Amino acid sequence: MMQSTALGYKLLLTYDVNTDDLQEYYQFVMGRYLPAMRSLGMEMSEAWHTAYGNAPNRRIGFICSERDTVDDLMENETWQSLNDHLQRYVTDFSYKVVRYRGGFQI
Image (cartoon, rainbow, N blue to C red; front, side, top):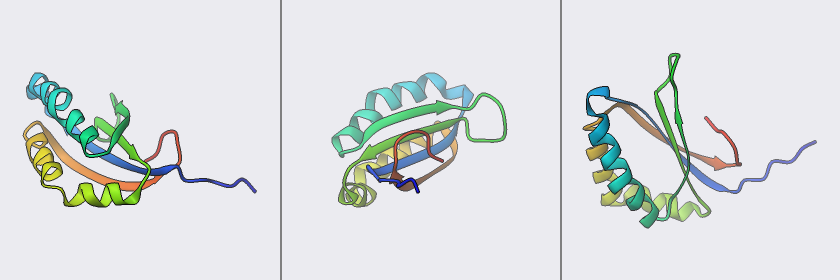
């Protein structure tokens, strides 16, 4: 039997980017969202774009090694403010936390 070892935790964000706001979206994500997430202890692990099909057109992953980092993030005003601002440019925003096992995770 193959054993699966968790490497920490992964925060998965999914949403649809409003095509009318692409420039502003990219400026916000690259200039504020990603640096702030890093300062809160979360490292971006991946970014996926869904070109076709019935799925959110963005899936972004952030990883950390400790559950406390995730718990602290969820209670942090900066995290909430970032997501409030992000939702100016996106729809159907959702997130979940899973055990990080490497590779693509849904």
